[in-house]
Length: 288
Ligand code: NDP
Image (cartoon, rainbow, N blue to C red):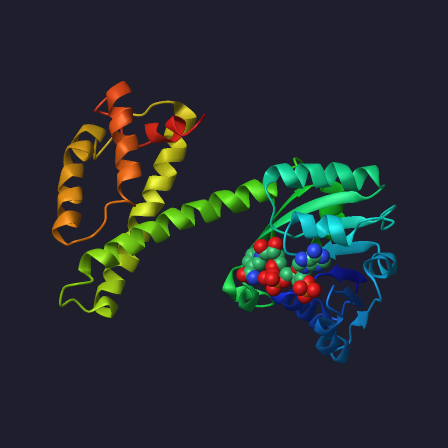
């Protein structure tokens, strides 16, 4: 069964989504602010609409994948959305997604927000493991899940339209913390006669070995409120070790600017908590 789809936005991501729907035989209408970007897709079977309004009018399912929330507002300004299922895959903040949902509903559309956890080469390649977090209208998700699952997998995370963006940002924020650690580790070995390519598998295996248990235990402790039972590496010991890490960095001529903020939080938690805890107490220190 094929479903007509209208897609607004033919950047790197929109183009990859378009190709996946075309390859699966779904009738596709596209629009892009710069019309030239639609040409290759038209040659592959897409219809190009003259304007955003024409693209929206062409299908009941309208997918938007633009640069940011402002570009969504600009592109859809004055466009009739009544009766449409609007699926917004543009990366936004949770607050922007909630406001956009209310905005779409005022205009008579049902709204589903998405956060894409994939890069364009992963789109249309199921074994690559990419997926989209969805939140907002459960009716739209149920009605449209098969066609939405064509480019990448789908994970529905709740009716609050901000939750897809929140999950997206949470995972990517953890990723940046990891990248910070990777940068610091390579900086430490940088001036030595150590082959970074030989070092890479050591680091690449260490990170998931630590991350898996840490993520699970943090979650369980946040839920139970018990920060001390069964702790293997306690906070007091870890805080006592931090000067070694800072001195080692200084000794290698490496800035401590990535390590210090986290070490400062560990110290603050030790000051108000117990040395028998693990590192979970840092989470609530971040809440303002
Ligand atoms: P690109 O920069 O490749 O494309 C941006 C798109 O937005 C283009 O179609 C551009 O049109 C359009 N656009 C920008 N400003 C406006 C505006 N004011 N009015 C109308 N259209 C506008 O971005 P991507 O395709 O890579 O990303 C699209 C979304 O997908 C973003 O929110 C991004 O965060 C998200 N995403 C991207 C990933 C990636 O790896 N690429 C991964 C996960 C999410 P024009 O061609 O005319 O400039």
